[in-house]
Image (tube, rainbow over all chains, first blue to last red; front, side):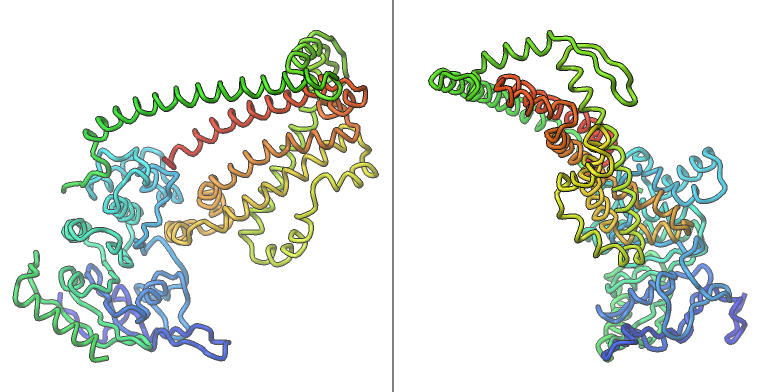
Length: 259
Length: 287
């Protein structure tokens, strides 16, 4: 189905509309972190937000997640303004945020426990998610017994278990080694293809963004504004050694440095 | 999909085998040294006591052992609140008298301390309201409250319970407070995104389990500290092990005082060991 520009917001999953964030509004020295950031993310799309450190991308993530309010502008999901964190947006953090006192399967089942579900429904749904992220056999392990990559798989499974409309990921692979990160990229793309979720992925790593995203929202810093939105028109799986891959990387790096 | 393993099993097992036998050897060495040190201590004590020659100044280990057997053999009957009439060996009866102060005081102080600690660390308004008061009251040693224990309740069982409860309260209050303060923000945010919206839900499902290591440390600390406090409170006249220590020394029966000093040490070691096992089981996820 062809999309037409200017259609009602209901047609788009996420609309970030003129989001501005000023810290310390009441102080003498307020800091403008974000200034009129606008972009949209279509249902089922994989969008990366990249920018240098200090460009406010984590603040933007937190506003979209509903963990912080915007000073001005708003984020709409299917036309409804975001007012707080909710189950329609599954969150995945760099530092995992796992519950260390719960086993892998109990972590994954956490969100289901808040809903009207039976123990059997929780068990089978959690098992399904654990299988999806490739952690079968580790159901009864505690997070402290897992490597960083495995912890983040638990984080992803836990977020997906309640069947959110989208995954919000803030530098999710920033704490794992390069080899594991590559593996997790492929797995995340598989999961994305299988579940058809919308993914909004924040990273400072341009290469990671080009490898994963349909579109890349490039933020510039001081205050954070959208420098450009780049469509990455490359077939998956994408290879870093590909010439076109390198061109996208150069272009995005150029946009960041220009600003 | 492949999974990288957290800890590879095979080489680990081999290494553990070597390590455990080394640990065994070290263990045997420290047991022998510990035994030697204890015997040396007893020997010096015995020789010193014989040199001084007056049992009331320093009773010898042999005199203490004799007194221990004597206290164990004596029979006594007391009426205790909650428990009722109790007849048995004097030593056991005295210990029960102290337990009647220790257990309720510890429970009341722990429950109130954890509750207020969690509430203040969780709620900004409560925190701002009561932080100055808690700052000022906390440095006051529990025993200083004896003044109020006497005028409010009298220096019987109730007064001793009151003092012990105050001691347990502050220890648990501060541990619970810092435990809750240390709950990672990401855990709370993830829980909120997964449908936990009420304060009580967040406290029950995230804050308490996350803070449980610190809270349990507070409970364990107070289990030990409250034995010290209960003895001190009884020195003022509430019946129990502490009162036996001061009473025997006033009769120049110092050997009996030492017997009850060791009783305190034994019950402390026992209760601490028991609680460590409970703690180890509850916090198995930390290993």
